[in-house]
Image (cartoon, rainbow, N blue to C red; front, side, top):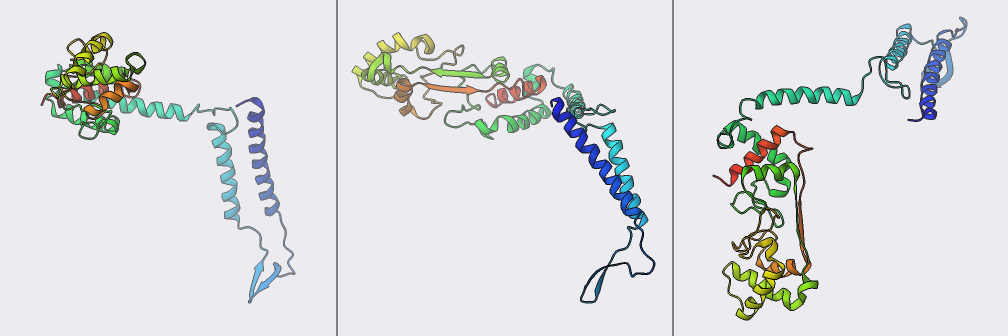
Length: 293
């Protein structure tokens, strides 16, 4: 807040308080003549509107309210950039509460968080907490049962683009993943796309035209093997999926031709800034346990 608005707010607030005080004093000193009936002259259906002074208890209630407002504005923010004598802020209150919750949570985690992964996944309390963290942060994409959907991987099987070891899963949760399949239509041409698609389908034991497969294999080795390997079994360093297991992240094998032609992309967001280190470890351990049952 710049100085103009800082002083504008201060002036408006102080002027209002002074105006309230003046109004109270003015009404409190009002004198009523003894020889009239103390009415405003308004009468309807036998009901007469009186013009009596404000009751004293009511007047003092307003006075106390004004004194309280002045004290509050002195102690807490309310006058422009003035922080108040208590130096209170919403951020500080939130941080104090957050630190308290974090301390209590870490104290609870201390009983199991440093266990080896094989012991951690067998700790019922740890897995219960991990499942709740998963439900709050991961289920939107992967589903409450972690079995994924089109474009979102199933976490309960043993098919992992980036590796299914605990440390690899932990890295995925912490830093996220970016999967990119570049469009190959400019390099392969339409006929080349069909040939490579036929070869890729043949890797998962589906019958294809032998001529297309033969030509497709040559082109696959030239353009695709660098990521997927010459055997088509993928490479978890690049997030390149296994093409031989008939598991397709983006749908059925019918999507292969479109994927080669147009390319595909997928993003797993990083959670290191959303979850603290202990919760990241717990949710990674929970995901690791899903495919080990």
